[in-house]
Length: 313
Image 1: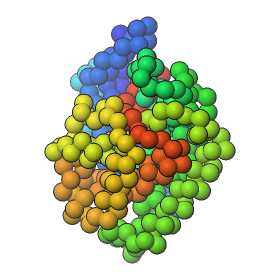
Image 2: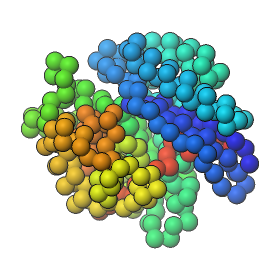
Image 3: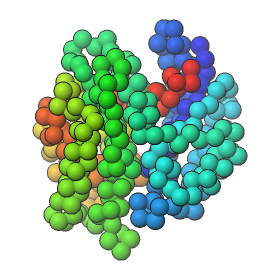
Image 4: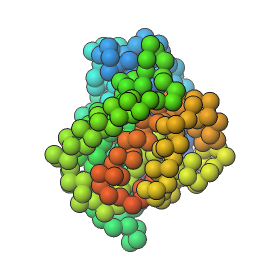
């Protein structure tokens, strides 16, 4: 086996996976998986630049991850940066900081590459599941963008569109620097209009209606699953491969968009860094289910991180 470290730095969070991988057998043994909310994409949609405080939060997490990687003795490291760093004018500052801390240069990948990693990570262990119809539609709802990938054992079509939970929140729900709590009907309508327009773009490339199994990734989707399971605290093992019906997703979305910050914070599985963006994230998920006619979403805790790890191994 090869011991590898994979880092995924997105708009809202930065995540680490250290694992032993055996490409010959398809076995991945997880040694450490962790996530830190850093909100690297803070204000990027508006300013086009990475904020100094967002960069420092990210670098602090990188220093923590460097210690873990050293302790576990990973032989290879791959650091992938996604939506926020693709969009930023000053991404050179970000690249230099990561290189100094981790000794590897972050790869600012395209949306298509991001989608392929997500698909591999999410479906590698599903390909033998006879009860799941193919093709899969994998949707990775991130902070700045959402990736759509249709495929069977490999990718057939992929597209990234700019409807992440942070981007939608900052664009439509922030007034005078404060997130509206709860959103108004007009604000929700504006978010839905943006999402529908983005889904139109996605459908130009990805045959969404051909998919038979919807697989959902990332924090907005896993949080919905945790709420559906009524978990008192976040539990990765319980959430992984949970199947949540359309009716349940709709009910949870309606609950979250009508809740106050305090009410959302009191939900056991809610990460503090998701409280103000979860409403937008669930609206994206619900719109995807309505557009595709999916009766349920299969929730996966294995995603782009696992795909990055396999690419290194």
